[in-house]
Figure (cartoon, helix red, strand yellow):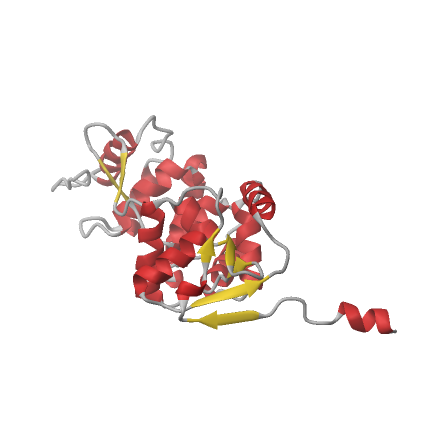
Length: 260
């Protein structure tokens, strides 16, 4: 009975402080990434204190979360932290190696269980849209599309962000999840006419068109019904846009340019 009681005891408390000078880094830890610190700083300024606690040892040396700490300093924010006795450089290296082996799905589940709202909503979205992989679901829930060079067909991100770092750190924030579901539903409507409706390149093109004032999705869908074999796989984004524009302008007197 005593043993069972011990299993239920609190192990590590989560503290909060605005005195960030009490923390120091461990000599030998990996160097920090300035761009990642800037991204985290912006996240704090927009969304408030980071929900993911840093881990420190009994001497307040940072075991995990040096980017979060430096970002909190830049944003003049408080920070949550967990104190674990006996940790040192070896545990830092172990944690880094362990996190590298985590998948995006692992991070999503972990942060969802911590109650971080954007990850909880994403997990629910993934469960409701099993046709799409996690990366696609993240893209949809971020409500972001990539600008495309019409000449090269390459992606140009509207915000140059390392989504893997942001997502893994627990600082990813979805935007309008209702719009995300609306867009997912539209993509599913294309399924009868194009098996590649789940391809990331095609989805990026469609997301950019969904916010194009010259594009009416349901008009496009009607044109697809008249040309059921027209939509095919394309080698790059520019080709997709050209093909979609051709489908959209079928029997249209006033042609619409969807590529610019």
